[in-house]
Every structure is written in C-alpha cells, then in structure tokens.
Length: 81
Image (cartoon, rainbow, N blue to C red; front, side, top):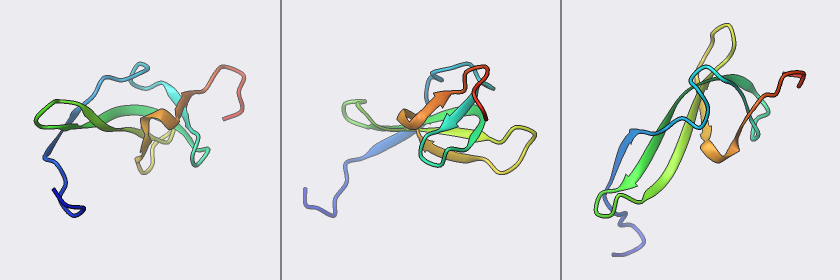
C-alpha cells in the first residue's frame, strides 16, 4: 500500500457518550449545542475505529455542525453557555 492508498472503511452510527439532546460544548469552536448523534468510521477488515465525529445542533435550532468526539464535553449546570 502506498501513501495514496487508504484501507477500506465503513461508516455507521456510534454509541452516544451522553443521552441524545444533552447540552454539550465543542472545545474546538467553543460553541454549545444539543448532541444529536455520533458517526464512526471503522476499518472493514478488523472493525477497528478510525475516527468518531459528534454532531450537534444549536439550542433553538440552526445549522448542525460536527467535531471530533473527543472534543465534546457536557455543559454543567451553572456553566455559561
């Protein structure tokens, strides 16, 4: 396999780290929103997770965005959103 080749992968819904609708903060952009889902990319041969993306939507509606799952943290009561 050379640098251009990428191993075959599949996409699927992943487990949510918090319940759907939890208010979370994207630590990359500092935006807050409601967690709506997780998308996982896995290697076809071994099933090993390559990446996990969280999807959020702003409170009250708006355009959904995504960020790596490890950059998502729940907003604790009393935190300024």
